[in-house]
Image (cartoon, rainbow, N blue to C red; front, side, top):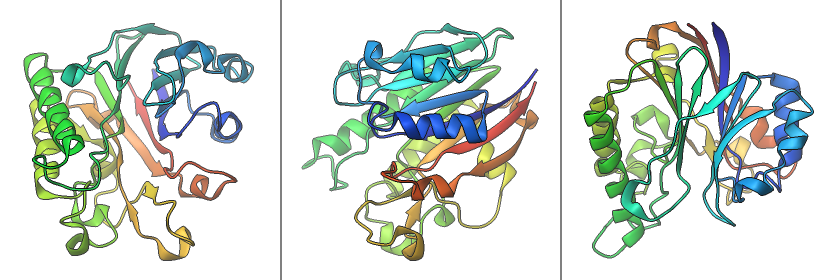
Length: 262
């Protein structure tokens, strides 16, 4: 079985339904994982996606915040979710394909602006979320599994436009990188994108605050595709669709793709 998967923080699936349709029509991934849907599940415009052949969906949602959805041309079964940190946020959902492959779609908290949990509860929330994710996958080590999403951390020096300038900026601080690394190691996850493209700068997010994001290119790789060690070797054709960041009224994230031959 082979399929192409994409992950994209859409920053409101209802506001950007047309962009999701454009991606599905032009790129035709078999599976599209969306984060920050900002919609209750029953308000996600599934009929618009089903008209393009994506009639299967597993999702968790809430009004105006968070939200994760997995759209698919392939049959999916709901494989549950984990409420890490117990705040009731719609930040994780899992789906199982007919061949048994489990796909985890995650939206890690952004963490606010100040990288100090003593004065910024959002940063503490982010670190605790990653710790609980680590413990979960350590206790239930994944097999034949893929984890994707906006993990809100750019771990490597070449995952940000300027390593030294961003060392004290949320998303690239050493403590965040260590927490993400611990979660990855605990589950035996392989960073598919970097296994496929080991060298050079890779970005999937450019701030709305930049007046000319493309020319300035002050990006970060916040969006990831991981696979369990038993299937990571089947992944190939990884890419980040930078051009989508330049679409009309875009998300500040670009879609990330990988193909799996299982």
